Amino acid sequence: MENQLAKSTEERTFQYQDSLPSLPVPSLEESLKKYLESVKPFANEEEYRKTEEIVQKFQSGIGEKLHQKLLERAKGKRNWLEEWWLNVAYLDVRIPSQLNVNFAGPAAHFEHYWPPKEGTQLERGSIILWHNLNYWQLLRKEKVPVHKVGNTPLDMNQFRMLFSTCKVPGITRDSIMNYFRTESEGRSPNHIVVLCRGRAFVFDVIHEGCLVTPPELLRQLTYIHKKCHSEPDGPGIAALTSEERTRWAKAREYLIGLDAENLALLEKIQSSLLVYSMEDDSPHVTPEDYSEILAAILIGDPTVRWGDKSYNLISFSNGVFGCNCDHAPFDAMVMVNISYYVDEKIFQNEGRWKGSEKVRDIPLPEELIFTVDEKVLNDISQAKARYLKEASDLQIAAYAFTSFGKKLTKNKMLHPDTFIQLALQLAYYRLHGHPGCCYETAMTRCFYHGRTETMRSCTVEAVRWCQSMQDPSVSLHERQQKMLQAFAKHNKMMKDCSAGKGFDRHLLGLLLIAKEEGLPVPELFTDPLFSKSGGGGNFVLSTSLVGYLRVQGVVVPMVHNGYGFFYHIRDDRFVVACSAWKSCPETDAEKLVQLTFCAFYDMIQLMNTTHL
Image (cartoon, rainbow, N blue to C red; front, side, top):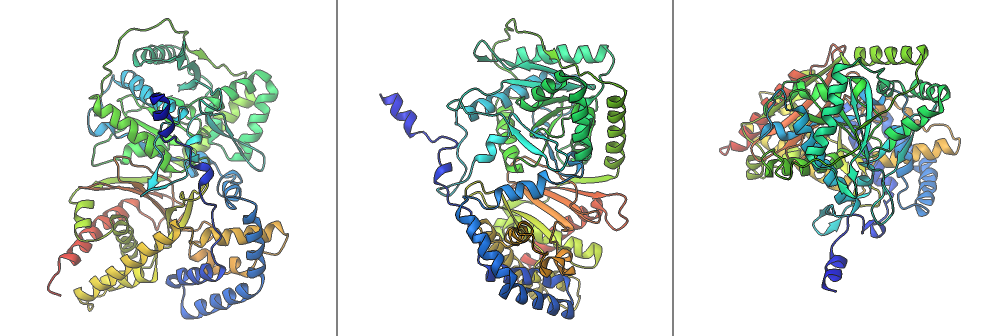
C-alpha cells in the first residue's frame, strides 16, 4: 500500500499536459504598437511615417477583421498556432532541411574524461549509447522530471518527439511520423539503426525483456565497424535526405516503386529510436575551440546521417561525439536536456562502464539492403555533390570566452543572456556600421504545446547605446545609462514574449487567416520595412541561448547575408558558435565573434567606472 502511495504521488513527465493554459491571442493594439517600435531602428523619418500610416490603416480596417477571425479560431483550439507553425516554419519549406534547418551540437565529454583519442570510438560509443537508452526508458516510464519555472509546470510534449520520430518528405508538404509510446500507452519500437560507410544496420536494444548492456552494445558496434571496414562501401541511401524536399520526395517514391521491400526498410529507419552514425573523421576540439567539431557535426558525411531523423547520434574516429537533429518536431532544449543527462552520467562514472562484462547470446545486427538501380545511384551521387558543395560554403567560428562568465555579470546586476545579446548588437554595429535586425528565441512552454516566440533584440535603446559607444564625445556616465536602459528594455521584452505577449507569431496568424480566407496579402506585410526589420524570416542575426549547462549548438544563418549565433553561459565563461556563408562578401563569423568578445570587456569596463 505504501509503495502504491509513493507511486501515485510521484510526478509523471506528461501528467500536467491536460491542465496547461491555452496559448493566448495578444491584443491587436499592443502587438501593432510593439511592431512599430521594432521597425524604428531600420527606418528614416519618412519610411517610418509611411509604415505608421500602413499600421493605423491595418488596425482600423482589415487587421481588426482578421484579429476577430483569429480569436474565433483560438476558441476551438488549445494552441491556435501549433499546426500553422509546424507547416509554415518546417513542413512546407522546400529548401534542403538537413543543412538549412537542422541543428547540431557536440557532446561535452571531451572536456573531462573523454578527450579526443584514436581507438576509443567503439568502446565510448557503447557507453554513450547505453546512457541514451536509459533516458529513453525513463521517458517511457514518465520519470523524466517535469520542467518548471518556479512552481509552474511547462509543456513537455516535445519530449515525445525525441525518440522514434522522423520527417517524411512530401511533394508540397512533409509530414512527421512519431512512433514513440509511453509504457502505459502500449508498445514502442525498440530498435536502433547504425549507419556506417554508406550502409545501414539494425538491431534491438531490448533482449529478453532487459536493456542491452555496454559490453553487448560494443559487440554489435564492433561487428558493424569490422564489416564496413573490410568490405566495399554501401550505396549511401541516407544522402538522399540531404536533398531539396520535393526532389527527395520523388526519389523516395521511385525507390518504393522499385521494390516494395524498400518501403519496409525506410519504415525501419523512420521508427528506430535513433540513428547512430559512425564517421571516419577525427575533428579537432578543445574546451576553448569548438569550430572544427561543430562543422563536422553540422555538415559531415551525408551518407551516414538520416537528415529527417529527430536524433542522429554521431560518433567520430577519435572518440568525440555529437548530435544532428531535425528541427521540425522539437526545439533544442529537448536535446540540451538529454545531452546534459548523458554527460552527467559519464562524468559520475569517470567515463567507464562499471557493470558486468558478461555478453548474452544476442542476435547480430541485420543489414538493411535496399534494392537500387542506376537512377537511384545517380540520384545519390547528385545529392552528395550538391550537399557537399553547399556545405563547403559554410564558415563556423566557435570559441569559449574564458576571462569571466555569469558569476561576474550577476555580480554587476546584469542579466547574462541580455549581456551577450547587447554585446552582439555592439559587435554587429562595429563590423557593419548599422544595426542588425535580430531574432532571439523566447520560450512559450508555460502554454499547452507552446514552443517559441520571436524576441527582437535590436531595440531603439540598444541602437542608441551602440551609437554612444562609437561617439567619442559621449561621456562614460551617459554610455552606462544608455546601456542600462537597453538592458531594462530587453529584459521586459523577454518577459512579455514568454508570457504570450510577443507580436511576431500574432502577425503570422493574421497573415495566415488572410491567406486561408483567399484575401489579398495586407499592405503591412508587403511594406519594405516589414522584411527590412526581419519579418518573414529575414533576420540577419538568428540567435539563441542554448542554456546554462555544458552544452553547445549551432545553426546556419537565416538569410544569405546573415549569421547564426548560438551560445551558452557558465559561471566562468561564455561559449559562442557563429556561422556565416563564405560566398557573402560582407559577413565574417570570425570577426563577429572577436568583436563580441571585445564588447564583453567594454561592457564590464563601463560597469567598473564608478566615478562618472
